[in-house]
Image 1 (cartoon, helix red, strand yellow):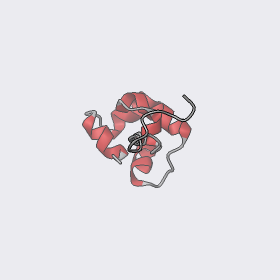
Image 2 (cartoon, rainbow, N blue to C red; image 1 turned 60 degrees about the vertical axis):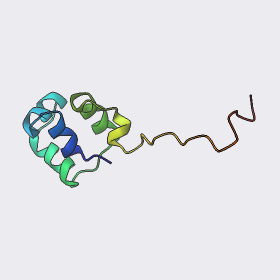
Image 3 (cartoon, rainbow, N blue to C red; image 1 turned 30 degrees about the horizontal axis):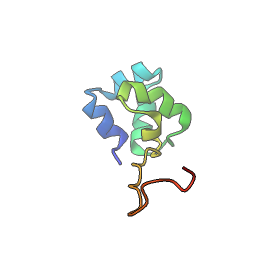
Image 4 (cartoon, rainbow, N blue to C red; image 1 turned 180 degrees about the vertical axis):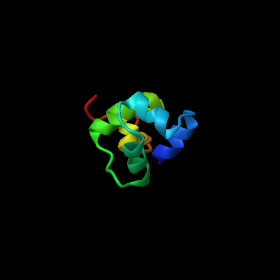
Length: 78
């Protein structure tokens, strides 16, 4: 999983600029990046747009879909 720091750097943002865009302070961004503060749904929603990702990505919930099992192209419900 990509870390919040990597996402911030890829977006070309300083901690200060990300804090401004998310409506928080630079020390809070630093705590999130270093693990001193836990990523919550509220934080993920605030930070996702400036970082260019979905909130689920920040929460580690955007798992890639599993490929269909061999020989089973249709659901048993279809």
